Length: 197
Image 1 (cartoon, rainbow, N blue to C red):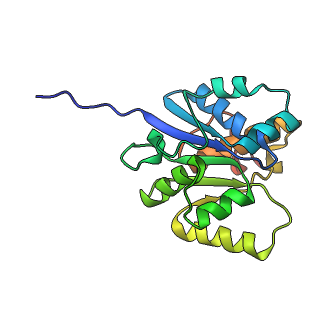
Image 2: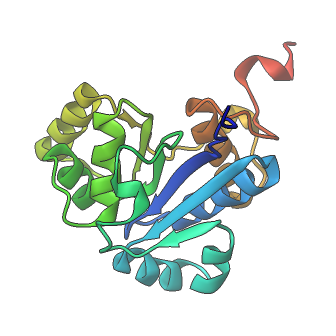
């Protein structure tokens, strides 16, 4: 009798060129702290530019937070196939451009293709859309991807957590994103956990 194949708990983290790339980085950090997940990273070329504009973190350091890094244009990568099992995907941050590609079921880059695979396989897909203000096209794209099964979660601060720093806000938002994906994250402040006067 053949031994049962143990499939690791894989999660895809993609980063696009929208502002707020630190959210994706913090998600990778939290997943590493939690342990038990094989992380697959996709960085768009625009994400690499945003990383340089918004942080002093080298791209190699971000890549080192993931177990596997995939090339943006590699639509033949493992995560581009539905037969390659994952726990789902987080796009953090998600640009309006990437949102529109997912809404249109386009797959000419690995972020859009992996997102489409999550939708067709009924796996969780969390889009941390970072755009403001919104026009009707953005809103309709959000409605479309929501109908397809995605979750749109703009990275908004939870002020009930009483953040003292930007890092506190980012960590809370990243932990909340993982929570939405069904992953228990450390240091997540919940509304009722502070007690009442």
